[in-house]
Length: 462
Image (cartoon, rainbow, N blue to C red; front, top):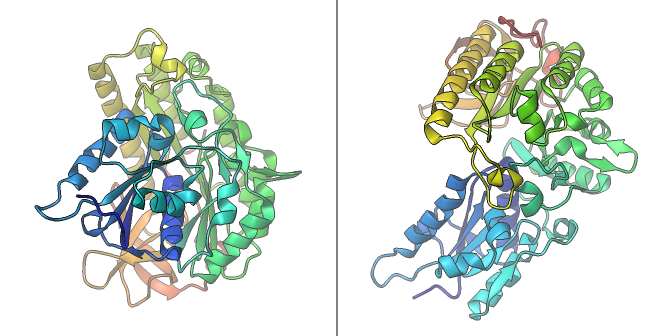
């Protein structure tokens, strides 16, 4: 027996930050349609699985979750299940054929139609929508509800780069930018709802354009919003790292000193096979320019090991690039062949055990660099935006300007910007103590001397 008149819902998002944003917007749509949020899928009448298709394991997890949700106690109605996001876009009608318990399938460009799809499913109709209308979904959303201290804001979707390993151009469509005025209005609404930090999102966020205005102009405009203390953006592409955007890192007080700029490999041959628009040398030159503009910037990247045909020598080139850059954070993955992408049909697929060994070596180096960056921060004072309660009584957790997780015991409140002395560091977080409250809405670069000096650690030049 299936629930056919849902009163409660739960949205579970997998994958990237854009999926988190999409999940929040779907929740707002359902609440505006009269449904009530449930704390967990097991307690909900409607469960929305907001999916990721970047790697095979992420897609397979969705089907595992569907099976688990269908196993309700005897006599208890099974929930209505909606599969949203990139798996929905990629597999469409195949999903309910493979998993008959699924009632709704909706792609990432059509989820503004979710309330109507729920009504169709309630009537027992086929509820599938994987259309890709150009950005019409954003005009269909209700006003932003109350936010936490940090909020995501999608400004750009889709990708025209067609990296040979990536499904995003097929699941999210072509690069499209939201209008400047609509973004500024939503940013103001987020601040009015309680956000002090906004992270601008896009598959290639620095490809955002509105006429002659690029992302740097948008960041400068958001920097003038009263009450907004911090601005971040992710994920960037090296081919769209303009001089104006680099200058913004030097000139916009609220733009945090953190840059996530994926490179994927240190081998020029592999980069060409991936259809990346840069080589190792041009990538390093970009980092030189960014560091010249903002010497204290923390760098993050993405890496794929085991791309088809990658040799031991080419993998060593990746290790050398990592050693040269010295990342504060990074994400690294084994190559996962995605159906329909050119790389999936390439010869010389790398054995799993080889990829495992390479990933372990790469992650050992990246983890050591992250720990060194955190340890170099000990003894400094910096601003921390308090975002949530910790596990211990009285403990609060927030983020430094360099996106480090910092925990401290304080009588401050969630949402406060406080000046913190960093006392100790581990691989994934730092401990600190409150020094003085910091004024919301101003940059830590002006709070006290030395607050934003770069954590100095070996190899910090590109």
